[in-house]
Length: 272
Ligand code: GLP
Figure (cartoon, rainbow, N blue to C red):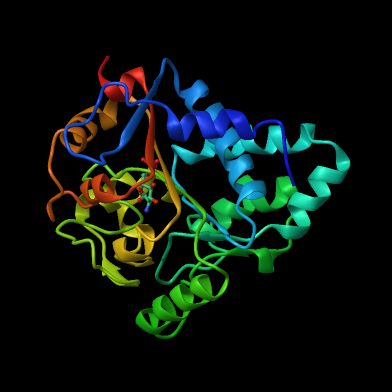
């Protein structure tokens, strides 16, 4: 289905980097003044990705950065003509990056609950079209592989939405991590658990110690990647990311090797 917002998103992925990055093909930087504008632009890209890459699910992320993106996305969907909105919902397929071990959709801090709140309910999407790893699986390692295989069978990700962890993780690929890393069960860094404690009432003890995540090898298979970074707290790690060669100590740095990665960032995150 051809839509009018396609041109905007083509422009996003074809835009020159601002500023240019050091290592080809590099991550293209698209700088916007505010987090609201970043969310709006990311939502447009998501909408385009949902329509434009048939047979390829969306790759989705969670976290505070993504909440306004999904808010803007739901608003855009509400404005669509009924026939386009129905088409979108009927053909929707998305796969999230990760989930905490031991948590299911009924647990408030789970990513499944987050997606339910921000996406599935507002868009009235059937649960079998919004995929996440099963955090309650008896064997989390086996669940990671089952989930990865289900994603591949669904066609592989078209547009992958990514947030950036304060320690440079993407998904839950904690440092050190290489580009060949597979879907798996991981131990979370203490700093990551601390950063995510707000989703658990600020109680560190309630933050799970493990998670199921797609690996960097899975993420790098996506046709297009949209990395979304906002807020001054991310400025130090973002500076490192933009000025480093790919290295195991900064998992997101492997995105420099991907042929179609765009970073959407606000002035606060870019320190400009
Ligand atoms: C989390 C998630 C990531 C997310 C990142 C940034 O721990 N595993 O998928 O993108 O860290 O989160 P936030 O946007 O809350 O800073």
